[in-house]
Length: 606
Image (cartoon, rainbow, N blue to C red; front, side, top):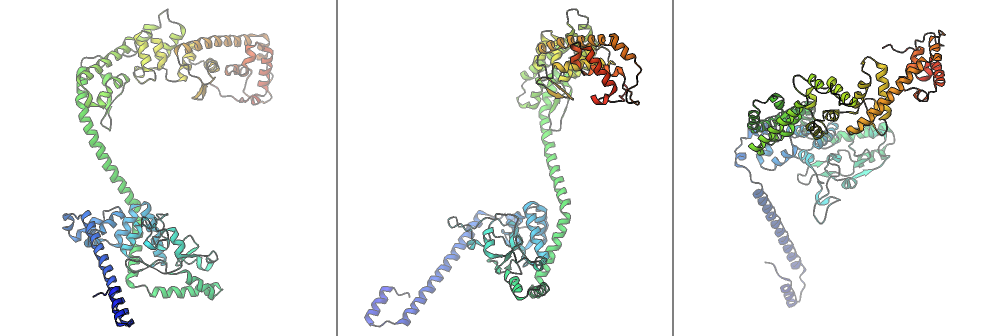
């Protein structure tokens, strides 16, 4: 029975004596009672937490019925070391099925941070510089995200009651899962410490090359020794004892022999199992990753195939209805040209079908009969519009030429467009995609075929070629084609862009292109006439007939080659200004020393 302070005081006052022995005994009884009450409170709280965890993590009855012999086989298929750790918390039978090989192999095969952590730990195990961690400690080390020192952590949060998170997730200093602040607390650092005699010995576990564990570490939950075998004090004692390197090494070897004697045979066997499992897993890592990728690809392909099949099954009725409505149409094959892609969509080949009925097959759930009929009618109208203008059909391009080239009301630039398209375009080109597709259809509806053809030219180079082919009818006349191209480039090189080696602008509209065409045509005729006039001048004729050899006897660059450089726009300004004497003197110098003008002394023959 516990006596209160007031009752004890009355008894003392009544007796008149201060009985110290009785008082001490009562204090001891009171302290013992408080300790027992605290222990009962802790046990009750622990049981309450366990019951709460059990309620929140119910075990599947099927799991409880699994034969123990199957558990290692099932666990071997796991590819997440975190999942292995969570399974170890479920039941005792699960913990018994977890082997060292399973932990090491799963960490390696998972890759990423777990693989880096296990590599660092296994290096220390191979070097025999740390205490061998148990299976479950190794599992905790690989999965650790917070400092294992708990309330002793130097970065402990007093409000949230949590230790510090690991700043470097892949680092385990001294094979401990501790934060960098605790590293400073449990280690000692001296630059002079790492002289050559100790740095060369891998059995001295260090962190950042200058830190050694300063005190023995014990795991709180199991009481096992953890961390480095060789401590800071061991190295420091050796340094204080001897100054010669060889004697220091001998003392270190003696210390290591003493430490090895404390290692049990069970720990040695476990270390060998770790090393063997790690080497095997690393050798199989690449092949395992390849198999994993192949499996993931196969799974994704199966999903894609199933999804594509489902989409095609939904789109097939719509396609059948379109095919039915196009029955009897002259260009049915053109309208339906296309194929089913790997995603289950039907991709039309020609633009009229893509725009009108392509969306119906992409979203078949919204394809009503009215929408399908309207789309098919649009396709018919668009294709027949191209046919009416002679741009498609079996008789293309002859029909296009018969329709337009003999018309007297067409200007030269319009005929140039038609002639170029006859030679360089096919019916398939006109049914393809164009940036200004609606403008093309608008001109075709108005019967302005040349304007429509202009907007089918897909590049600045095509518009240039229309002009070149127009003014130089002979395709073998390379000089004329070169001159025509230079004339066009001189008019279209301001605020332009590079394309196929030419810097050119892009006439955006038909009217702008027509103006440029006419100006270039006029300039080409003027330059071509001046070149002919220059060649017929008596002085030029006399110079061309001279037989004086050039300075370089092996030179094949002739006098006419010098004049032909006018087709490359060389000295063209003197030609336009009719400064024939200056031009001729330049050509004479060019003949004597072509290399000074960047010309080959032996030009290739075309």
